[in-house]
Image 1: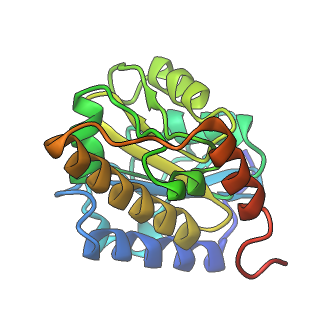
Image 2: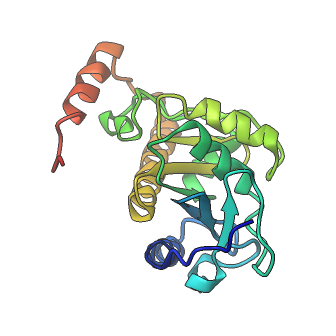
Length: 217
């Protein structure tokens, strides 16, 4: 195996996102993890370490085949899931996985987030799906998450949490924060009753407008 490249810029960017993930309190203890795509593989946070404590040197390189060169910390137990997303979704440049409170609450009910609010489209579809349950850190869970992400960039994970991807670590974190806010809103709706959902036509219009929304490259 070739020597690990430094990837200094990617390490710094991922560390900043991990620190902000901790500050946002989206994952208690050491439950959150994040990664960034690099040449030949990914850099991912190590297992068993609180996000707020991550340093650039702690980040673990895992190659595209799932091999981890010696001399590093152990990668997050969810590296299979990150690896599978990068393989299946070329536009994924970084991934954030967390156990945020409201997303996890809905996931424990095995509920996704329907079109109760037009901002559900921020994840790319007319809903945010909930992947079926499988044990953490398994190829089975990775397969289920990849399926739930079809035509979307975020999903919930049954009895587990949420995962989001974007072009950069901070963009992925921003999406995870928005998913958590949407989960909280839907939870509050359910506490009162069933919300009136937007129609398929209304969500198609939203998705079309999102194509030109904001500052475009």
